[in-house]
Image 1 (cartoon, one colour):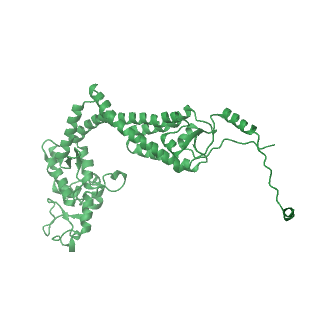
Image 2: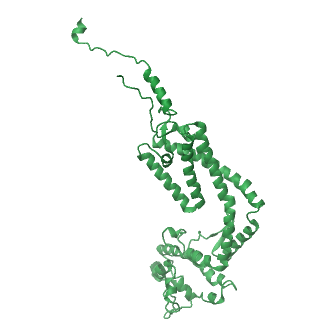
Image 3: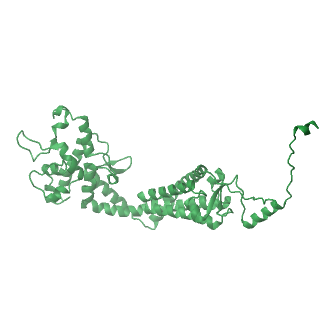
Length: 404
């Protein structure tokens, strides 16, 4: 009995080709979505939010200006004219620059009448500064252990290594600001300049550019004053809370809604409409790289499968986008990493959304597949019914036959 010929042939594309196809699609989606985002933000959602009105833009602008005014008046911030916002100083080159900013905050700004209670303002003396900013011991015993333990970590651990109480030769001058220890000067002589090591260490103590210290590392005194002192003062915190509530409403209409809408529309076109138009689940990237989709049995994918394959990652991305922040970056990154791993290491080279939808990516140029089992059976039957040519095997000639 002759061996039956099998027509169907499924060949998987390499992970590299799938990656390039995915990058092509992603590049198109990002570019188009960005353009649509700006159109929706400026010409659709913002006008709607002003016309309804859903956002009190006048109050928002006034509150934003009040926040910036308080920040700049504190001396801890400056107004960045190019960015049109306030920001902290990051361009100072010596520790004295940041030390002066902090001294101004405690000894000048907080002394403004009615800004804070007069009793609290009176507490900010040079001796207080020596203990709570320079990290020196409370040698006069003015503060309780709880207050001393609550000092910034960097102050408790490093301050006393740099500073010491100023003296008149014999007595410590507790009512004057402390000075840098002589050991940190060239030849240990305060009349000379600080050593290069001391310059760097003291600058890092006051400002080390570690603005995301919560993710690791030690925060500088300057950043801590801004976040742990200034930000919690009622005169700022109350206004800033009102600003954040209004800013959320503005962000909702000018950013979040346009983002979600643009991503949704462009994603539907790129990952749902296109695969139906091009058939076999082909996106633009798959079309360029010669990749198609079939179901797990090796037949044409159905529209429900395309819907499942598309909506799962889209809902995931939009959900993470709404959550925002680190969750978005980590969630999307983890999904891409796991999907790429399954494409490389699994037998059928499926991504996570392939498992959910029951689809398989194939090489469209080298594979042979059918719409369904009926079509496959009919075609296979026709091929096997065709008369096969019988070719005689050549007879090997020996030397005797050659002579004849």
